[in-house]
Figure 1 (spheres, rainbow, N blue to C red):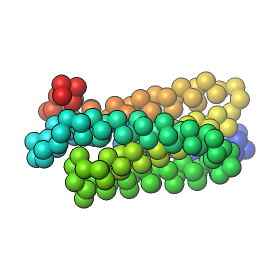
Figure 2 (spheres, rainbow, N blue to C red):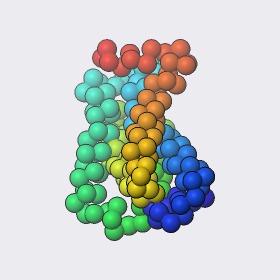
Figure 3 (spheres, rainbow, N blue to C red):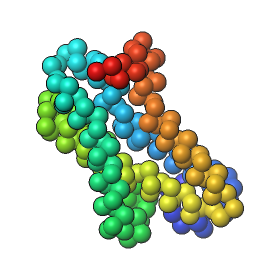
Length: 177
């Protein structure tokens, strides 16, 4: 079943549950991009010399991009003017491509910092828009719908650190620089 902000397809409880699971998985996958640079920083530093200023910029560019993206989206009313499911998909794919570009960009370079900023800006079209999609699916269970997406956001944001831990790295080592 395709994601939709239209409440009509979600009168069926099973269909709503399937859609919510799909939306949660998408949120987890996309929001994992948020803290990726912090999770891979130790490995990146072992292979590339990146100044402390640029290390901080790589991590904070996502937050700055998110603030910019959230404010721009709110002022332009994007989630109200564009189909939320399409906006979600375009922002998720753009964030993924921006993040993927880090494989070919100079670590800590201006382009990689801008790619992280773009990632953050696009995440502002995923998390809040996902909330808009979900709350359109019900009136009595909006708390449940929002709560599950907040859980997905938290898990998605923490997942890069979980992967670092599973690979034997200290996931909080980035706090030491």
